[in-house]
Length: 101
Image 1: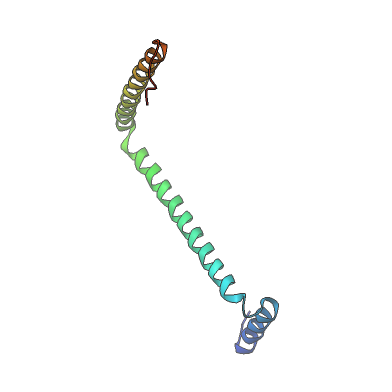
Image 2 (image 1 turned 120 degrees about the horizontal axis):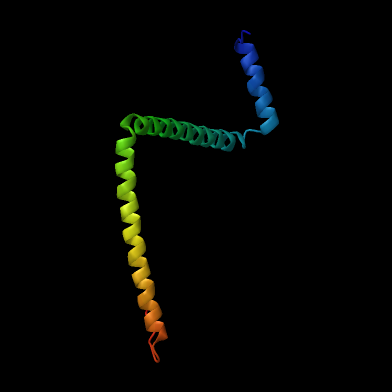
């Protein structure tokens, strides 16, 4: 499969006839955007794989410590949210209570 100059010129002419010269810049711009998005997604997938591999190398002890820290943080946030909800319920239960906002 050897493409020479005459074949390339014929291909370019066929593309010009099919799409027209006005639509070619838009088509090439959208193709460039699509390739950029595809390239970014591929890089993201590679980064995800590396992160997953790094986590596996840390060992279960490091993961357990990180999970325990995150669990403690979430529990503290839940306790704070429950206290705030109880406070709002108490305000709403009072006669003549103003809007808490």
